[in-house]
Length: 373
Image (tube, rainbow, N blue to C red; front, side, top):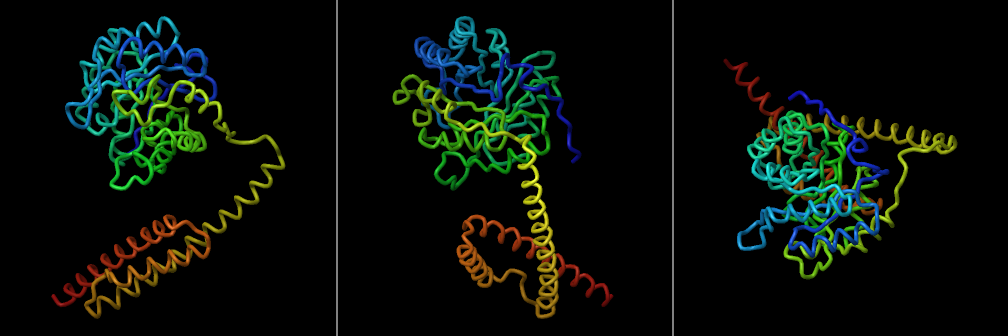
């Protein structure tokens, strides 16, 4: 499918006085007026946070958990906006939410992961937004599917919304490792590659699922040139009604952004540029050599496919595959290469080898049958 070009208004044009990065903070869920005002007051005192977030409707995985305070919470956000000067943002999951959020002058709408995964719901929101001038931020879908994420962004953009941003909050996985949600960094990187003007904000709270891991995720996000962070903040995390393990206290959130390294994209130092040019030339040469080696390997794979066809042998040899995988991992360890790098690299190569063998053997069979007839 032909790539659709997004029409994007830069963040700096819709977030007043924004500096290098955008910081969004607030509780997972609005629980009470007092709770919300206490958090907002402390965050406002520290400065640096431009948008105050709070979940008003909370679509929980199972019923019976706290599912949000509802419309009343929007009045509290309006009060916070008037008193402390924050822009406000809430999650919307349908047209009715959009109407209520606009009724109470919410500044930014966000579409959550559970909604992004459903094109019907996203289109309903897009239809409700036509003719409206409001920024929208779109979280990635629960599953690691770039097309779904792109589709949601395109639907909102097609509704005339140009003040648009994406939010990377990680993906559900059978084995997310130490995190609550697997970051799969290559997906937001690919999104940025396809749409360089699209701001991507990271939600380290959801990815981490644990306050002790948030700082590392946040730094990684800035190192990957993301436009900012969306952090869950609560004045009493241990008694929060949802996601208590991933919410920082306001002071902790302030310290977090203060301790992050804001690295530059480039340098004006001529010596630096000369050194980098030499090193990049070496990388280019090695990459070309690597691809030439892969090409040579695939030629051998084609020879193997011919021999297997002649002897009626299946493309997949499981014992060989297992031995090969372990051998490559062990050799990679001797070279101080991470296991996951070696494993992933050879899995990709082996999958392509199997595909080539299967395709070639099918073609050989067809040619043989054709020659008989």
